[in-house]
Length: 181
Image (tube, rainbow, N blue to C red; front, side, top):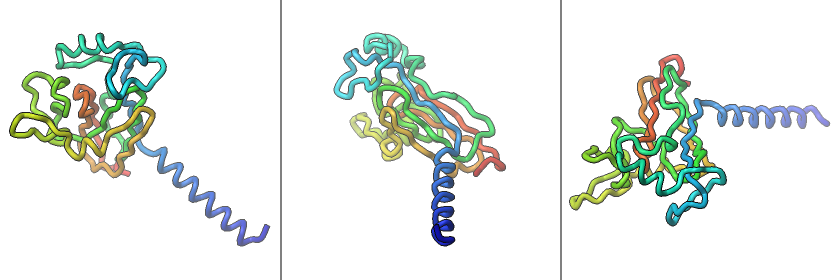
């Protein structure tokens, strides 16, 4: 092998390692649920094999609508002095969003919002007739089961993320100035 080919191979390997390191950077969050795969979850179903929560159990937990079902969550719920990049992986069987919001609020599914909750503008627009329409940030941060979303370059400060479908799914990341990159 010539010196040029070895050098090219070395540069290529370094580039692959740099991309891998970049993909692995950031704090990982699990956006998850425990939907039962054989329950009637509607048109999108439940795309996992081992969940245990039936549609009826989910509906009963959401009668309160302040807390939602406890197995629908973002883990961890709080990170202090976190990095300036985060990765959110949907480890559940239903679709979720990982949307940064200025203030936690309701999402774009009216029946899953707490009574009287102000809708987070990053999640939905409220029409004159009161109908909610998903906002662009929520649509851009939708994560299908098994997929991952990478959010880079978070400025120092406090960042709130929530699922705009299930708005009780929330996390807060505090990014320190020295942890920005």
